Image (cartoon, rainbow, N blue to C red; front, top):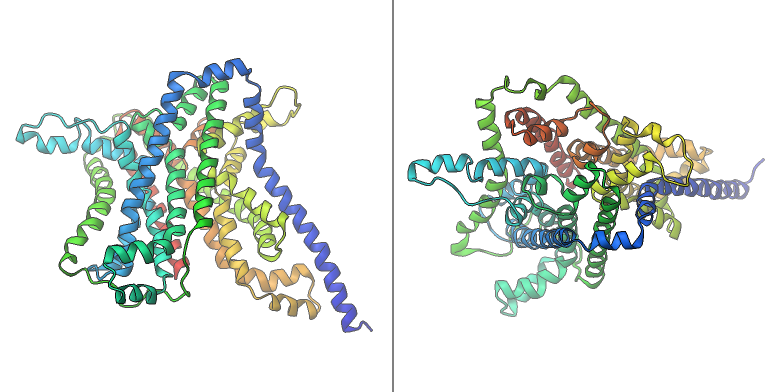
Length: 540
């Protein structure tokens, strides 16, 4: 008869073996995700140093670098200036209808910036719809919306919610007694915010600013529509014209900018922040009375959300009622386009979840260097712009001189390669969600199942898996929704003739037949709106 001690020893030995196998599996997954970027570096090293320097020293390259940095700085700064006050108004003040505004000002996050860009151009371009309204007043032409200012404006309108949501989360965890103490010391509103509230929420603001900055440098559609030469646009142009050497060097420059952004955010996060005691203000009476500014303060959320939401809806609605669908029948939406979008997004979500479970479970249950490295490795793809990832997979699939991998050309421009790109790009969303859910599982429940004779796999299936299912579903839903909106990787890697909602929208705007972009845009917005439901359910 087996003694309890022998049984516990057997369980411990089995756990050690299982941990080794899980570590190897997670390591293999992480390494696979990093292979495409390694290929990009190898491709760039093939360029002769003299030629590389000549390409990087071009005036056009300097212009692209300057525009990218200015775009990133402008979007990040403006997102902070908009997002932080909105978070403060909806959490700590008596803003009228603050619960309503707290949801409305987050909704622009569901609109892809390229849809916002071409609707803004159609509305406020020199010969746009707004100019037609002003025509009776003698206004024949509006100022140009193209270029850097227009790009900063449009991208900011669809990225400030990152800062708003993270700053709001920080404020909700803020200890209200700290602000009350500052008020007893006769600090004014501005002084109390600067000396008490801001240090607490600075890491949250830095996290949101990181997302805004990464979005700004990785956005492809908006700069193309706004005619702004930046890295993403120039990489696509060079790839389309077979300038792979120049495209690979530009991609490495862009990756360097991304790494600098990550380093700055990491430094700000490590330096900052007071901490409350976990007593938040959610559901409590607001701490600050706006007084006579209470109603005028609603102009900020109304103006920002109105511009971001109403302009696209106005233009899409106008095109919908005036559409001439006989002008270019080849651009008309087909049922196969919808099924293609849903199919590849669902496949990407399934693969991302399946590969995320081992990595997330290892990181949650084992506090080791390998577990942390493997989890961090999965986040690399999310930080890499889609245009760079697409280019890296082109190099990966088409082969590399001196390395014989005969199977790779067979996967070039295939659906499996496209799905792999989506998994690399968006897997961190599933990893983060599953990791968080796994941390909430009481380990004593699993231990109890093991002591009752359950095998490790059965204990995981009967105890852990049901408890982490909400995180798995949420992560899969987020991967599905973001995959539906992904533009640059889809344009580069899709098989010939394989149309999705985003490619139909892109072809319609590129050919100036905007009426054919209406239905796919509305479908995409409806599906993207589900992401807000996921976020709200996770928050609750």
